[in-house]
Length: 224
Image (cartoon, rainbow, N blue to C red; front, side, top):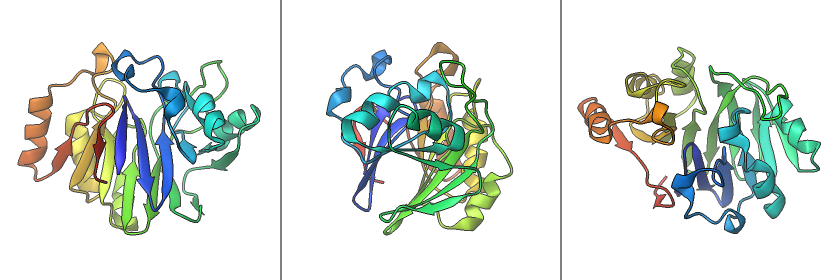
């Protein structure tokens, strides 16, 4: 299962573990119905250092004694705040017991809100039990995504759609083809004026290509 927390943030349950990705909740008026302090998780995954992906990491991780999983620079940044952390980097894989994670390339920029260098952005391939999914993070379309489709079967992909800062719908559709995944959940759309999309047009575009696209509603839960 996964619950949409707004922007690019999701709470995903896989093989008994709860993972929150890129939490941007407390400053997001669209997510005002979510009680940040009520969220429960075991891990907080961070794709890169921008404010709209890290602002609630410390609060959520501290509330839950959760482990922060990110690139080396971001993981150790939160480690210095006395949070549990696990550093990764592009191409690396780690078995956390309930699931495995592979860090994959994401083409974007990265700096933490206080100006600290945020390292190289990454996406995540997560597999556990009978499920595998890909969380792209903020990224442009890249031919490296073809490798993802060759690593293993991806049951669902969380892809950015908002354009301007990341892939737009056309490139996200190509990304879905590269990774050989038919079930797509959109993210990084509608939060700001720069990234507003036409829902009907985007859904129709994916349907014509034989892909199932979910544009999730905030605080709603879906089948992984």
